[in-house]
Image (cartoon, rainbow, N blue to C red):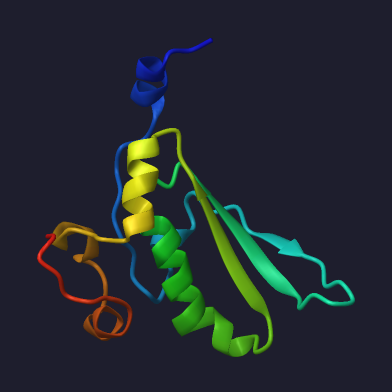
Length: 122
């Protein structure tokens, strides 16, 4: 079995909410979208998996892109994102959803106003 240290050194350590909203570039690299079927009591939807999500920036970026760019074209279609990572510490940070200023440097001002709350954490 590989030790945690080896796994950590193999993991990609770059995170951030990046990519122009026009091309959704920050979302395309690690998200594996998979359409899920509509059951009798379930609404159709799209499920994405951000493998190696680190502190959650990609997960949040996918959600913002859905809300602002994609979802309006598919009313009634659900959307969910699952973020996984080998680091419990990073997952705990992702659950808190607090991002430093450098993580939001490429986010348009109107998206910052809509999706973020100012805080003292960064």
